[in-house]
View (cartoon, rainbow over the protein chains, first blue to last red):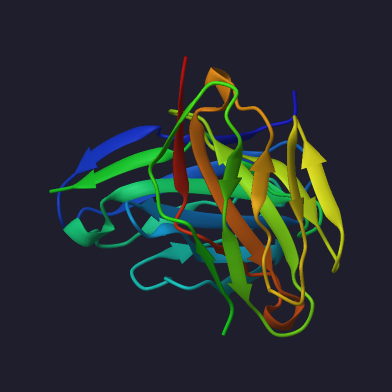
Length: 111
Length: 113
């Protein structure tokens, strides 16, 4: 089954404790992206990647890092999480930029 | 810069009512336009898309026409069902910004029997 998976689905952590949210797709897509969803703000793009070892900042990259060492994986790293990074995070992948496939989401709470 | 503005919700309709959710955009060049739907507890799914002016995207009874002259991509459905209750996002992808996507804030739709 073609899908985008994210782990964990739910995470509660404390300020400053490094965390990684994994994202994996099995569709051989070159394009992958991370978004955060906040009430009243919709989805905002954090980072995206056109291919292995190619990443670019989206609209809200501050406080986040990504890496793309393999085509199928695109982890999101929060080196020192802060409460304003409490949000719902979505990973997405695409063959071209005309249709994205979204993962189920990761709800992160930073206290 | 590029942006998407969509009508604020929440929207509550009775079953079989007509639905319109307004979406307007700002973009340079020739963006592709999308409507995504998010059902409770799930990620977003592509509902329909249009890649050039005057294109009409359609799926599951929903339609939207790419209007360059009014920079709009309004979503319509003639007769909504309870199962259409979800959050709807308008989005664009503009060639002048590489491969960034821009989403609207989302419109929550509730359809009551």
